[in-house]
Amino acid sequence: MTGLDRIDLALLGALQNDARLSNKELAGKAGLAPSSTLGRIQRLRAAGVLRGAHAEVDPTALGIGLEALVFIRMVSHSQQQSDPFRDHLLAQPEVTTFWYVGGEDDVLLHVMVKDARHLHDLLQSRIASRSEVDRVRTEIVFEHVRKPALPSYVEPR
Image (tube, rainbow, N blue to C red; front, side, top):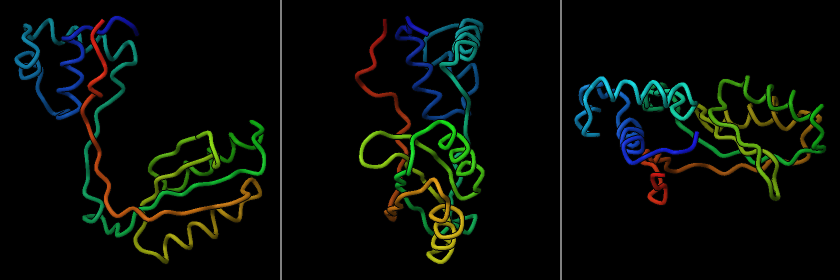
């Protein structure tokens, strides 16, 4: 969707900061009537700009004690291998985010596990042992902060 104006961007920014805002609260932030705000939100959803709302959960409250980034270099880049491998990785409950990237590695995963033993088992038994994998490199995450705001360079059209 092209043609997002300053009001669309204000609504998107407000929702990224707090997806629980009511339509009335959003209208106040955007300087619109609630009915106009609702119409804009529906248009942004229909156009695929606004793809959902998410609850942020504290991983430690669920017994998750370790997060890691897993970099994978694949043996081959054929779609016949990469699609089933992507599906396999996304089926792993520890994998929270999947990126297919360019550069030295081909896949980057964000994983959440109970502890170092859990990470080792995941890597050994369900990732590195796969025939599609040439190399696996892991980086431990010490801090993970999600920045919800739209980038400042996004300008209304």
